[in-house]
Length: 206
Image (tube, rainbow, N blue to C red):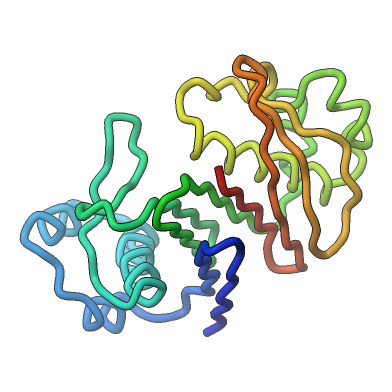
């Protein structure tokens, strides 16, 4: 089990390699009836683990168990509205982020070369040229994660990654910062990243 707590500008971020069983995770929660009903509808063991893992991770991050609700776009929020939250999962990895007053967005991705086949769908032609023309997988993964993180903050007004979101040129390191823009509103965002052999993580505070 690997867990890392990251603090940035009063936000809390937990990255967790989920190796526990469904039974062990379930023992750490007191699910309300509606959550139990929802959980029992899930067929996939992987999805069951994610369902429980995200709730245990949030409980770990916030020090208490709070019910998660979802809005019309499927975006999660806490029932008591005590924190803005964002969650992400990829393979065995989970990331959860929370801030008491600012919107947050986080995305975690495990290494994959599929991004080289898809990058033209989420990067405009200018971005493609500026970001290695698809040659640097690490850079492409960071750009994809950055746009996912921004989408989680902005919502449906950023659903067209190639035309509504812009990632400016950046240097690929193990950790660093990136700049992004929501093109229709011309709002700029600062993003932070960490990248290892195990995962790519990008997060943002709005």
